Image (cartoon, rainbow, N blue to C red; front, side, top):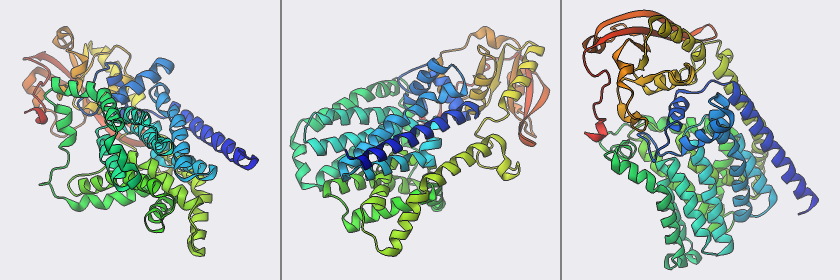
Length: 500
């Protein structure tokens, strides 16, 4: 490696380390989201599967809290640090597929400055480990191409298995790999080799705990996730959200480079056939599904996580390999020069806004309900009411409030979601004695109150109204009800719709 190449590698590593450090700082003082609190509760009861997703996010959180405790940083620590091996996988993938240190370094940097990677590894959801696993799927497929050695298919299977343990979206990797092998003549020999099939068995073996968990729970998780978008629910309005949200999550300049790179891979034939087809297959197979999905139901921006590894490599190809005409070249140079600064500024602005609300003049924005700003103070007020009335347990109506209560109330406090008990099946049944005495019920203040509670308890008394605030903005007002004299089973144990 020459002096110039060594300098590029060093500077790339230093920038990525700095970005990871920035995320760790942000993670330490940003309150957790309701999803993170929910997954944190999963991590206290590890299992082969859960109602919503496979278990990898729970393992990631558990590993972090073992190091840094049950804190915001602990919940997020391992997810953020996984950006380091993820960056290595992207770097090596780009170097193998398209050659050269520059395109490899550009790929790794561009991935790290997208909001999908920066915020997506800080806010721990199943998409965070899925993004990391997806990077290694691409890397190991590149090693298959580079070496021609069948043993690398076992590594591919392990990476796909890890992706499947993260999110069911990973099942599309199988189709992408088949398309790659079929469309590249020199790779078709692998259809007659045992190695790809052995790799498939490795992936299946890793995914087996999820299958067994579903078999023991009426296939409820499969039914919930695989039944999201039904053909009869044709609502094309959601497709209008796709491009704007992806421009934001990719950051605009990276999005432009990625789109130009995909165009170049298809029409200008940048790079070898096998490399081009691999990037396109890994990208379009999942994108086509989500476009179809968006014709029937909403597609959240972070669901596109597994397409970001091939997308940023396509962006790096546009930046460093393609010979553009002068006008396009100026656009590419501008995007490449400012992509990292723009991504860092967008990340910093989002963190500041989520924590303070300054940038919107304290008005509501997309982060205000999901990030738990104000929950520590709210939980202190709830705990004071619980202690004052001698309540043995705190009930909530939704999983987000349940998670926040469990995280921010004193450790060991009995906290339960009154309904949707399938979400907590791995936690076991609560002690009946905790539900026999006085209980607190926490929910957003509603004009009609909670008629169902009057059917379940002899006495329902509102004892407080408490606000969750971000600066001067009241995010929510919660009614705190004291429940006494249970008439029967306090918890609604009705099966979920998927199991009926």
